[in-house]
Image (cartoon, rainbow, N blue to C red; front, side, top):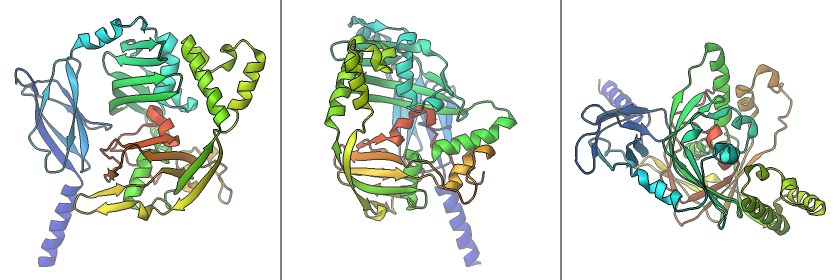
Length: 414
């Protein structure tokens, strides 16, 4: 009997540990009155609701740990709250009314406001959705009219504001994504990109015939992604999942970097989105164009040195918090080799690799380094609240076109 009761207790505890119920209320910061009709969602998930007449809400989340709760409404400033285990009941969220004049003042104080999506849309879409043109073609911004573009010719900086949430239909992953764009900046002369957002996912209405392909597509987006990597760090199975870690030092191609800077500066001077793709349109001298093309075909890195690292030395389990601390020095190179079984799981029958044949796909390369001392603390679903880890390469280049919600689980049996 004691054994049975112990088993029952463990079962209930395990079930409770696997999910979290978040309850709270949204109020007006000034009047303290309740706010009905406010969108409440777990950032980057399919989990959301609307506040009731008393401004109250309740969300059942199928995973536990730290997570970001977002309160959003067109008439109020969006607010994001970090929810921690044990502090998920009685969450009070005061919202400030949206200051509609703020962005207008910023834009009107400049001489270069430009609402023309036709001019900037191609560049903005590539940066936001990712570098894979094939997958980017599946995505459609449903309401481009909410975007306002501002270009500063002196700093060659492009800033983009959104008057309301962007609605992005992703036909590849089968999600309608509501993107609350907080900040978007792109500087032409140094090719630096920065943007912040929160997102909510909804399944698109699909026919039964499309569901099988969508499952394969979502698996494709998952494998090798940052989410897949962080979950593999948490589960201590990086090698099994196709990842390898290396300490990385590189000798960069200085001439290529110099030429790339000239090209970016020229693009910024012209402020023509079309010129972003064609060097021919930027320079009058054919000799200059041919030389720059030749240089840009070279590798960014002339030589590099790598030393294999064991993930066990970089990851430490915190049993009390249920998180894994991940830390390393200098630059970390992460390679991902798609296992044959995973590759075939998301490809159609015609594209599958026959047994015994090798998969002829280059390893995906991602680079990571900490911009501040410290570590990240990874939850079981791959989320971490810290913002001190900088990532570039394959995982970063995927962006919105391959973004998946935190509550996604790959269909390994398909």
